[in-house]
Length: 300
Image (cartoon, rainbow, N blue to C red):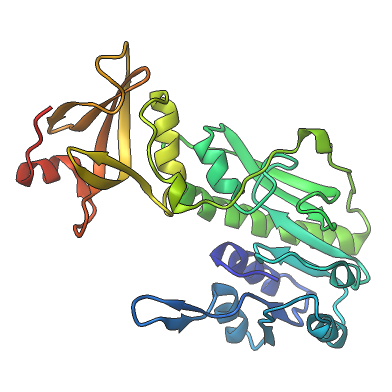
């Protein structure tokens, strides 16, 4: 059960795992994309169809239809990776070996829909993936195993997604093997340490220049690839893709433009200057800020 590229990486790994038969794939319904609203298949569906695996895209999971499908498929184990739906207990409890999940954080930190993005936004130095048994409460099941990794300097959530997808696929295969061998551990989470990672929205994209510079950089990288950080400078609302930070005493009111040159657009923040180095103007292309300034001079 999964939907995006992150989940497709795990499905691909299962296809390569000797002795494992994928009997079915549940994924979200096809979604209309673009101005013409052309229906687009989720990555998991595309991959499953390539392998001849039956694909199911129920709009509801609690009306008994999905349970009937699961009963017909009769899986010994269900693996859930970024499915995007809460799964009812009657499905969770059906397989002989239960239902497991690969989650993009080190649980119990960052339960919820956007753990990878919030790890970057909050400036975490380390993250990883967790294999757990799914329970009724979201991301609160017993932990089987984890894999950790450092969040690299300047890494966007999009880049981290790619690395964690590969790490999650490895962990899923190891977890399937440990369940098969009877060696899988089961450690209850400490729920008092739980934190949450709600879905990102466009309303969260705006840069708060009253924050410290390093937090602003983390915000910009965490919002990439969606919804992309935004800010208004010199009366223009820009999408911001990259920036640098020079710490120091406040030189002007937070949000004020203090420089505009070949380095980019320097903006005062709580503890120095953040220089926007890559941006996109309304109706324009993503470009270096210095290139934008050549055609659109800004006076600090």
